[in-house]
Image: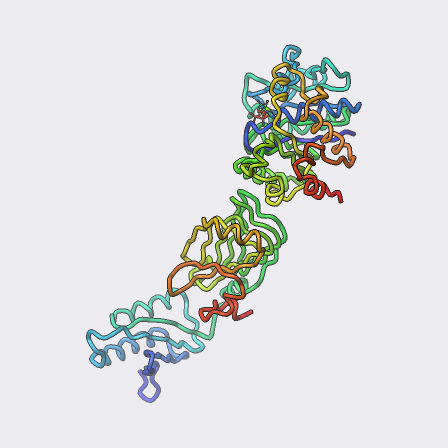
Length: 265
Length: 232
Ligand SMILES: Nc1ncnc2c1ncn2[C@@H]1O[C@H](COP(=O)(O)OP(=O)(O)OP(=O)(O)O)[C@@H](O)[C@H]1O
Ligand SMILES: [Mg+2]
């Protein structure tokens, strides 16, 4: 029986889809059976980031409305046998699926996969409720901006009300080192102080993320990228390993704080 | 009206009048006699003098909300009289349990996050933070063992001006005590509070009609000590 992890943020454009694609990829790299689920109905783009757009025949709404079997809608990744994706529909809107239908699909997927990674749309309405309906765990993505942290806080509050979901864990995305140094960005421990949840990892702002998503190739597959290293570490932490933070963080003198945030001495 | 035993006795004091009322007669007799006596005394008061404060002592008579209002209005027809207090020894079970609820301390351990609102009757003892965008409301005082970054509303009932708000780290976006609201946007204070980690107390300073934030020790030393802290 697999585990379903929803990737959410409240605010739009902070990196939910990027995180879903890369977390799914690194778990597949570790040999886990992974299914990515795009719940951003009407604005799907997980398929583009994964480079699988041209393989889509059926989608999640077709499954919910009984036009096809769940298996028929799954798209196999071109790089990994153990990685699949359930695409969102593009031609309708978020109300086309009910949370109960979503939960049924995720429960069904849990029988065949080790990890179901659910990419949540922005907002706190129907799309959010669909995405969390079948989830066992949650990852909250934020950027080091006050508005993004505020929305993350709102989302954490909502996730805490979902009884079946374990306490959410945080990924801080798009950290820019030069801004951190100059004190122009919210500091990591300031964010941690406010949100007060476990830190799953931090991902630097990396041009490689944008170029690789344009190529339909998740950045995690590019070993020379700093973001890739961060995603690999996040993947190992999801699998339960204790992974220290990257050297890049050490150079900036944040290492001690990160270690304590991750519960390491 | 019975001659040997009046229903209403008017006593003059330094600080105003006290109306002592019989609590076994009919309410209407009381009202009637009160009016008569006050009318009789009209010429005793200076025309342009200051208002005279009136305290009503109803003894063991239960007065409903509307009866209290009626009494008040009747007394206020004499425009130099100002009712300060209507006291009765009796209250309904309902009123009593309501009052009791106002006086308890409600301990809650959690983080109040953006978009969340926690509202209690009585004093709130919050073990956890109030984040920006979060709100805590209490009819009494608010004590926060944590950081207050959101909104805190203390003394949310009519006579809440004596309520206080205490926090381990006081960085609110807004405070409200009784009817008075304050915004805090003092950057210097902010740095200070974060660095020193000194618990602070917000209270309504009656002399300036504004909410003041000060260190606990300083508040306790001052003369205008909020009564609710005295109680503790
Ligand atoms: N670490 C990063 N470094 C550089 N660019 C990034 C990073 N993470 C995300 N981006 C870029 O930010 C943009 C938004 O990312 P993404 O689509 O993953 O966000 P989202 O939260 O899924 O957005 P939406 O709310 O619209 O679904 C994309 O162009 C993506 O390439
Ligand atoms: Mg997205």
